[in-house]
Length: 454
Image (cartoon, rainbow, N blue to C red; front, side, top):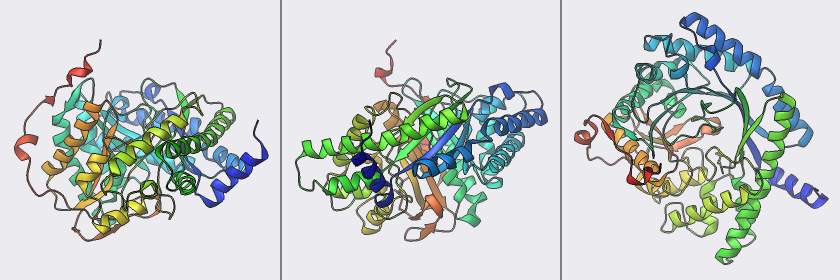
């Protein structure tokens, strides 16, 4: 039973500590939309999304009003489009027509993002996969709400280095295509290792082929709540610190569980998972970096940061899994630079570098996220950064990702404004030494020995 104290406590979390449900994401399978004809395929896709998601936004708004819980985003994820369009699409331009259809449907139902313009190529690319990847720059430049992702590696299969090499070029092309918006297209493109099938967060969400026809996934967020809780036990020992994080994560996840169950019941669509990630925003007090400072480091990036982040990530998961039977997605702590004011402050203070961020990704949920780099960075250097991050995910049997934004026309010391949840970011320096000879090798990096567990 929920008592009056718990009601007051949750209200305080919402009004004073930035607690929110970051997203309700409706996953929709498009496998039954497949056709040999591009025009018919687009018609099928549009009609299914409209039919399935027509009440998603209004349902979320009703739950917000009735329970007083902010639900920041209502989103859709779909089956990886390279699978859906493989039969009909013979050119990159054919795939772009699907991107336009997805964007039109997203506008029609009122969601802010639609994910799944994706390809899964951890062991190799089909011709459809390659066509979709080559279409990404155009697709992201002519759409507003479509998000794209490519899974290029996994612990079981290794890393497809041909795809890694190609994506270095694709990211630069996307930056160039959207340079009038400070290369914003790259903010909607994620490269993954071990991508989960049920991630509700953008830009990496897609509806995996192992999922049901339609599913409701919810992503919760509460960095401000965790920081406030830790400020009440400042100077306490590690046991107290860990217990505080676990208890707070439990409370935050219960809010998400309530919203997920209500949305599932009202929409008549099965509940999938709760992703209990700490996802920051540019708002003051809604920062993962601030939690690390509360734990005891002067700035994110200072000595001790990786250990503090490992502790935080583990305790969030331990608390969250007790609050829901279906925890999935990414779940843990996000460390995007542009979306976290504390991370921005750390970069500007000189405490946080790209290399330290890479080290931090060994122990947190995702990877190098929303990092602005100079627009003249070489494609091979971008591919090298991707390869490093994919290797961390592959060897450690965890999800890692890269969302780099080479901002055309800007260099180290400049600041880029993306707006909204995407925030702003200082352009960070990149190691100037080359890796062309490594990236130019063809084939794939084999899976690590511990992948062989059959």
